[in-house]
Image (cartoon, rainbow, N blue to C red; front, side, top):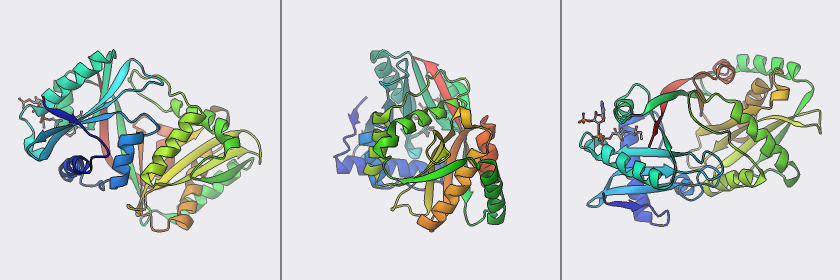
Length: 328
Ligand SMILES: CC(C)(COP(=O)(O)OP(=O)(O)OC[C@H]1O[C@@H](n2cnc3c(N)ncnc32)[C@H](O)[C@@H]1OP(=O)(O)O)[C@@H](O)C(=O)NCCC(=O)NCCS
């Protein structure tokens, strides 16, 4: 199979890859906006937090008709690889998907990993493809979207007041962009609270966080050009960090906010900190990015605590995604 590795410095190849993704989005997920080009390139060079993975393009003449993404972590999950396969809507059911997957499995085998994970829209032809290819469904993830023009802001204000009362022993700290050095290790430890989010039947290790990984995450967002808003709850005014929530807004997509992690450390659960953080973030965004209309978030379908908070704040289901795994 004639695959060419996508070099993020090759503008023509990046454009061709984005053109494929836009064609796919128009058919499969028309409710989602196109990524800013700078974000696309930054993900190729930085990934989410410093482990970018590889993208390989399937060309036909001067057009990209498919691509294959491979992600291998060297921090944890040394037994597995993440694989993404995309075929142009006009080129489906011709065997390209099967050939791209065979190629992916071969590479994963050569890398010494025994398991591959992938994701598809739920209850779709893509899910049928995964099932046909021997994958087993291991988790359902739900994409919810908050429309800030439709949200009942009075209700949100009530929820925020109740949360302030329940969490009166805590204070909030606003951080834009980089975490100050003196908080870095504590933020790394707090970030590990995300490992308590449900992962269904996935065979995954806990993510291991340290200061360097937090800095790599920040470098990735800075390369994208994203404005980051991080709200941190701590016990008292200088006690241990208890929880945080992060939202990113890209200047090239100014009406859209991306909800990144929200997590409360185990010792501090049960004080409505999840609600407090998210409701206070809404107030902050209204000041700092008043043009934001939609905020997107993803949760495992079984994550009832986080979903309860999100639903109360007006998030509504936009789409469902299946996560899949198979041995190589
Ligand atoms: C899923 C996807 C990669 C399939 O690509 P493709 O080139 O059409 O796949 P193939 O032609 O190799 O299909 C192989 C088999 O999978 C099954 N399959 C593929 N698409 C299907 C669909 N829409 N409905 C039902 N079965 C389907 C069929 O059994 C098919 O064999 P057949 O055409 O002889 O019946 C493509 O639809 C796509 O890009 N989807 C969006 C991204 C995605 O979800 N990727 C999958 C996760 S990696």
